[in-house]
Image (cartoon, rainbow, N blue to C red; front, side, top):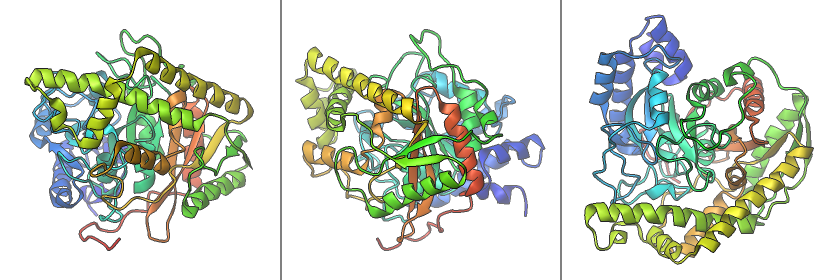
Length: 482
């Protein structure tokens, strides 16, 4: 088998090693990625802004000798500036916007040798756990194209799961990396707050809850990429604690015996699919086999109050960006180009006061205090990553729904994840099992603030004990019945 023929089954680290050994060139990797995107993207709709020629010119100009030299990569279509490329944020209102420069994170990706070749699909303004923007249409899950890959990093997850690229940029403001990872059978890591920068202009996303990183098949790709991208930016008012050692080095050893608290009840009291519960229990049993102590428990944060606070904070953060874009385009009513459910969200936000916003931010701090108390007793919190299986396309989309109905459904689907955004603590979704329907299910593990290295050590141990890289989706060349 030729080196290029192995593209679909190798992780980014292995592909970069082939480049280093000169068994394959960066251009050959790019052309293989292009071939796969052109073949499968008409079905999956994972890539909405391809810029293959820009990737070719990047290679021709010479690549730095970083850890991922020559590896094709996708950038999420919201929040990440890349010079000369579109940034439409999944919205008709922002179509035609082109970034004048690179964000700090994108520049660090380029310094690591990655070759960005497109922007991945995302719901409008990243405000959904399904990727079905009216501006670009739905992304489809490679495991079953009748289902969603999740959101808001759904295009990135679908692309990696289908083998279009070996890893892709993602971001997570309430679970938007971890849920698509769970739905697509990938490893999804949300770092501690401000581990990765959002500069050079923006300091925080949605009051510090939005945290960028990636989705990948392997733990080592995620760890190595975070080693390359992490660290404060000039002018950042605060930063995550310095790690004890490189995150990739954490994978070389097993963690000490850990105290793991397992919670199986939705913090909102909403239903959890029995198969999602079984997946979390299975990871708990594996942790026990590996020498860790696992016991069932509950967290004590106020999940209904966090749900209400998140709605205020997100709406108030999106409203000014929409207004500014409307001014730039000279539109009397920019909300006419916004999806109705999001327009209603923005209209609601316009009626909020500074006092309302401050109360919401203080609720984030209260959640952080509660998780701090939890992690004084336990090293790790284990739970389902998501409460439901990958939804059928259309099931969770905002079209035709009131804001209240859409928002309640959003939180029923992902009740376990947002506490880690509110607190800034790191968390990850690890592939656990397949459902009776053949759909991936992940389990979530989180740790105290700054303990990203501990999670990588545990993830590496789990991956060695139950390797998941060979658990790939069937060929997505046909659309299975739901």
